Image 1 (cartoon, one colour):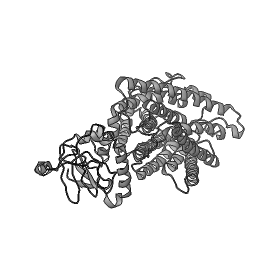
Image 2 (cartoon, helix red, strand yellow; image 1 turned 90 degrees about the vertical axis):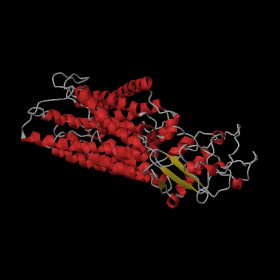
Image 3 (cartoon, helix red, strand yellow; image 1 turned 30 degrees about the vertical axis):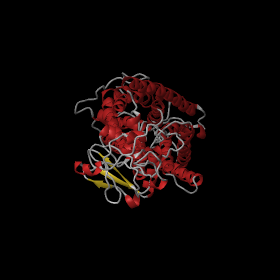
Image 4 (tube, one colour; image 1 turned 180 degrees about the horizontal axis):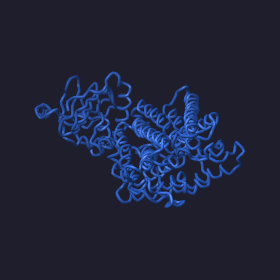
Length: 557
């Protein structure tokens, strides 16, 4: 960026960049809402925290060295990297453009890191992720220099990437691919009975709308001003961005309607729209409106079918960031080489694409950029994430993952998912060896008290109540029917099927202990190692069916 502080045009251009950066930063909220809505309920707080971490740690590292590597100081830079403006600072009278450009580019850097958080969701340690967020700026800064700085080697060859399809989305998407491969799939992700849990489809859709809004600032602000002919490019970017997203969204809805028997799958619709937005990002200022629709429709297809392909080859990407950002970023760069036209300023594209008689040169440069940036990203992200894994570990333990990152990392218990996670791998014999402190309470409802002991109850009952004892509150969840498991109190003989019930029980306080002591526990059986996974799965299904009727009853704090 060029300019001097003091001219009217500089004020206009700087104001446009700052306003665009403000809008781009709302994308952090959008990513947070989208990802928290797509992950399980026991991890939604944690994913929002990780999006916050991206700004905190990623912003600090970009200020310290990221901006210096990406843009540096004219005269000191070389084709590979920039040099200068480490720990960005300046005096009051002459640093206006420096601060404006730094703030605008900071929003791009943090977005690239935030993309990766979705691929690492539900199984990554928070402290390890903080380190990654800080160091990931290095992975991003070098390709940003190659593509956007005047001295960058790809920029000098004439590459077209107006708003970051390669520098932001390919980098973020393929860093996410390496991250999810190193982390390995979530527990049970590819088991035959796996049922994906979307904690809040509404939050995911709201996040999509926020990203949609933020993308307009992303693409239109990349003109770096509105003076001269630049406002015309901003207007073009607004139209192509919107039309591309409509093309991708229409493709995703049509595909879902046909493939899933007239059902509109929320994840496909979101992927189609976001994939189209990624695809139009490189050529948003240099393609026509009709071409943007074509680009968007193919981008939507890349996102939807790319996510399906990754699932089939057992790559666990919780929010489909690899397909949406990585695959669609590649298509967007190729599309820019095909459909771009020479624009009036020459700052963003000085050649016609293949479709407009420009030959193979521009398309060849686009393919070269894709190849080099992808290889750089795969190698450097593997080194960074592997070193973090070796030095401090990167994945939650199996017990922590079942319990949920919200409870493990933030001491935040969410409804009855905490208890279910704790019980997932505990066998019945472990329960029958536990201390018995049970009593009937209202219509065969039992409670857990302070010591959190468990009991297998054999008495006939019409239902059970699971109560979580947490530092915050007790939660009672009625379930009217569960699998029949149990033994007779007086012997080890099996009970009739209609009299067997599983109860997780305890007394409310010590005042009830005398009453509960009169009840006889189920004798322990060393060979009884039946897993509770099937019990929990059935409870989940019944609870979803009866949620409107039973709900959650909060009792105390």
